[in-house]
Image 1 (cartoon, rainbow, N blue to C red):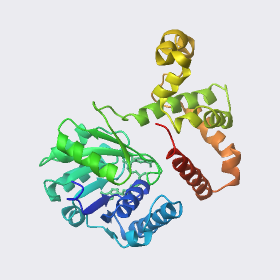
Image 2: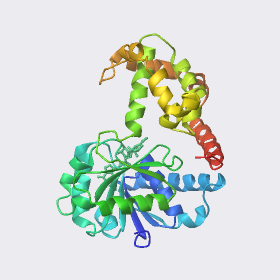
Image 3: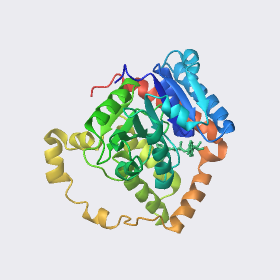
Length: 317
Ligand SMILES: NC(=O)c1ccc[n+]([C@@H]2O[C@H](COP(=O)([O-])OP(=O)(O)OC[C@H]3O[C@@H](n4cnc5c(N)ncnc54)[C@H](O)[C@@H]3O)[C@@H](O)[C@H]2O)c1
């Protein structure tokens, strides 16, 4: 598969499409960014190049200048998809938008070309209904923001997706330096967004209940569990939390008294308006948000993330 793919179409050139384009181009693929108008594409091209320069300056990639020459843009989706060996779709997150694009891509792409979606949590089983000709080549490959830096990609096949599509997508993702995980069963939100949603609901709830400020909830994560999460997941974390008795000791003797915590946690599925308001007010009161622009904060985040990625190369597991 890796050798078969030379040209990739990135359909949708927003934040996520740009991240994909930079990684594909740096890995040696010819990339066409597709979007609805030239102005959006011009901006996307510049941002993609700047991400590649950033990755090179950070020592995480080489050849940004050469890779820039492998980038092109077009508003003609049929032409780009028709000439591609792999397609990564990153348009708006809704079933109607995705289905409309999948119906068109399925008509024009060569039948062996994989149509991979960046969807953050939609089910491929639903999207691929629109790809009437070859639904078996449709799959979700969900990146995490900032997608040019965060290694995770969640591969979620629909019920009509072939095993060959899963395997080839996995290989391609590994080839561009991603760390893929594959869902064994399809669920909305995949793995990491579900875990993230559980935490986010409780973060909103703690502020809404008046238990803590937005600033202190963020501080608690960054200076506590967040430090561990950059190097190990919840299972290994709790295995070490059980002392020498490990996960068995933790589950049977330590982790048995959380009923009261769980009973008092949020259970809602729609964020209450009061929580929305308090979150917005609280974020705008954060010292970092008051004293820095969005771009400055993004740059600061990316710089620290590079440091973490570099030090993780020295890790044990
Ligand atoms: N933003 C994130 O943090 C993030 C992370 C992972 C995955 N995603 C997913 O990636 C996808 C894109 O998200 P984003 O944040 O880049 O959105 P975005 O709004 O920044 O970009 C979407 C782009 O798609 C273009 N578009 C819409 N319809 C199109 C069409 N028919 N043909 C060509 N281009 C079209 C839009 O003009 C826009 O430029 C969504 O499915 C989203 O859920 C987002």
